[in-house]
Image 1: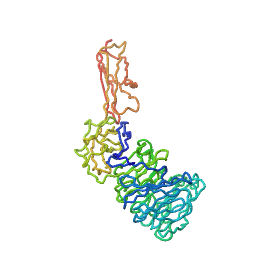
Image 2: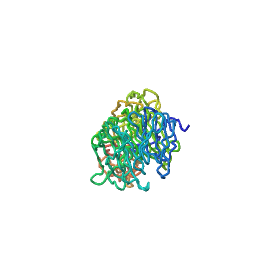
Image 3: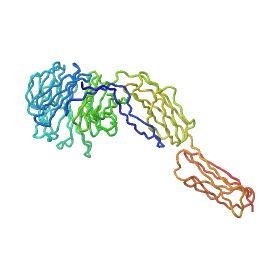
Image 4: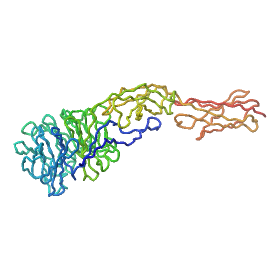
Length: 577
């Protein structure tokens, strides 16, 4: 048996989220924490060209193109939905694209010299049709009851990236037809609802501005209904296609673009959808995309290193802010990244099949992922509390609360997000970890005097529904400042008096050194002396020649600023002649 069973492994990198105002940080892990099964099988292939899922018979087909040499044999590895290998279909030289007919009775396999057919119940060959030779690997898709396939012939595999590729059709009566559509590079096909066909062009030296196109495959002639290229007026934004997929209802097209991430397009005219999907994690490059057949989920595969997620499972609705379930594949048990076009779902959305590869691209793994079938309610209980009781501008403030969860405990700690709204608008604070008892602490440094409203949110994940936001309004006051003054008990008019002191301002650092006002009060009245600037270490010195005998009082003051209270201090000296 070549299947490894283990619990699903989430990405575990800690990210530092800088908090608004003062540089405090709170540890933040990836936002997905729903439990899911992850079964992994090591694939008996050294290259990968196609993945097909037969939900009627619960079979998964993985094709090995094996294009390195003319004499290489191709194969199709067949697995069941639990990750056990059922059989291996050996074929003629090279095997590339895969397609299933509408009732999943026949598997179509693109070979070097023709189209091969296999019975999906017995996996026995059912004949086929000789086609023009293909040396670069075919892409197949079943649309409108017809198998569409690509053909490209070159003398050397190294020329395939920019070779001329033709799009043709294979019919159930064992006849082939030239469609007339062609372009350069390894054109990729994907079937969609309503007898539609997607074709996308990866970048190559003969296609500086690659395209995506939609075709109507309902008739005898393949008709293009929409097409788009992506370079803007400045020559930027070219598509770097890795994969593409229709949403189950056909209203949207998701494109895995290694340059731009996940593009979400209108299924009718390929314009940008009003709301797109969030960006992939930093350092992740899009490699695959697939919608679940039940319309609930979108799977996005990526090429990433270390603990950066390589696979994200999100709600298919881009307006749903539920946090994704994330996987980081790393090492000999998992592979290192999701292979291009390496994602397919079962029809009911109960399983996702992901093909991963190592960095060298010569080993492959099949992952069988089961997203959680149930979501549970969540709620904030008891409101929010704060400490200290008096919030001060520029000083740390802790906002505490509790998140209550229904259902089983999450596999990894959940996260809440927080914002602060004050007179200057709304500010993202960051995320905070929810402890096992449901409590959490959000740290902040408010930077504006007045009312500040803290809003804490839980966006949910694939196991837990979002919670209703909880808020707390606090009154942020000015930070204290203190002047400490030291003076001699007695001094003379002839030798003068020297006073020393320190100035301390709590909260946010002053933009420049404080300047203190100095007043002297004696039996002749009150007068203002020269101001004194506080040194970098907060100290200051005052020298004065008293003008008369007896008690003389020195008062040192600072008026404060927008974020700090003022301060004052006095000292009395007995002056002799």
